[in-house]
Length: 166
Image (cartoon, rainbow, N blue to C red; front, side, top):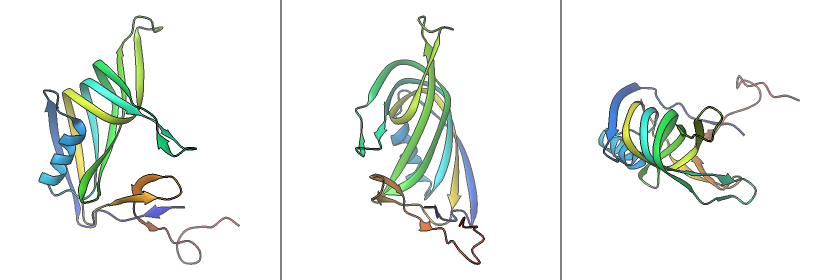
């Protein structure tokens, strides 16, 4: 199934910022969403972390596995997240790939990554694009057990512009 919503009929705003001194990335981005009245957005991150927790979702059992916690200097190789709303609060969804020195690794560097449940900034720069218009809300999706964006189904069939394979 495909769901879809046009989220920026009014335009978009772009913000650049920095997080330091152990700022919790999820809490900080939620604070920015509230302060700037952002109903939907996407952001990119780079910089360094002092701590990160990664979780994995078990698709079969439909439950989160226990978090893997890394407390060490971590360099963000790739960081991407979205902002939406869940139960009247900003919801930050963040995925990271981080590197760290590892003398036992073939080239002295290891990578970790995935769904970041928590991350603490040493020095992180971000670029945030806010999509002005209708906010995006999350709701429980029965088929996956996840709180996904609650959007309208994409119309299919004659006149929809979508080709249906027969």
